[in-house]
Length: 346
Image (cartoon, rainbow, N blue to C red; front, side, top):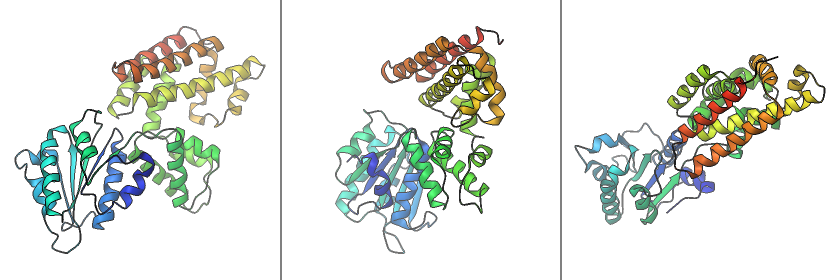
């Protein structure tokens, strides 16, 4: 059975008794792990109890494929239901998992088997197995973005007894990465930084958020719109290494181009560059003001419109053409860099 995204969090915090196994998969490996741990904790009570939790990777099944079934049918010495976690799963274990599901259905008193996997295609054997098998559930974990990131920020701050204006929440969400685990770590750092305060100000967020994925995104975007081909090559390579999704990069670039458009329009109306930047919401981070100011001299309204169109088309191509996302993204960014480099700052 497929668990709808809206029910995923509640489902993992209290897995129904009739569920014998859960497949949790997706490109957001941080969220995969978070939901797997939530389900395991809900059933076993503690992730560190060796009598209640057995955990191993797919590699461990190569020499001993029956281990998954054996662990799933083992009875806890301390009473209560056990949890078996299989990490880094791929379709190569579909047969083993099929056997385990069949065996646990017959036994009727089995552990909760949690299978954790990366992104699986719609034709994945594992996905098909869990979608069609009684007593099995499948949960997809997609990268955080948009309203989902805003909700994550608000809930995390509320849980810590903190409040923040909508503008600050928007800035934080816009500067977090798309991986849930990284986002959690950044938000935890922020709550520690403001210990003793009841409200988070924009300056607090800017002082803490952004030394991980957000910095890499900024490096890519600023290099592209600043005409720095060498810097773009280095930043794009780092983004690939960190696993930042091409769609996230394209959207970050689109937001930046929109801010440039807004500031350039103000300058064409007679406003100076510094005043135009100050009008932007959220304001330009102080460490990036010099670069942003230089870019305002490079771009014109018509070239910014072309850049925005280029980025929109690149995102569409990523979703429809079947071409590698990374290649489409980098080609679009290189074109932006060429546009920016075609004019010498005045």
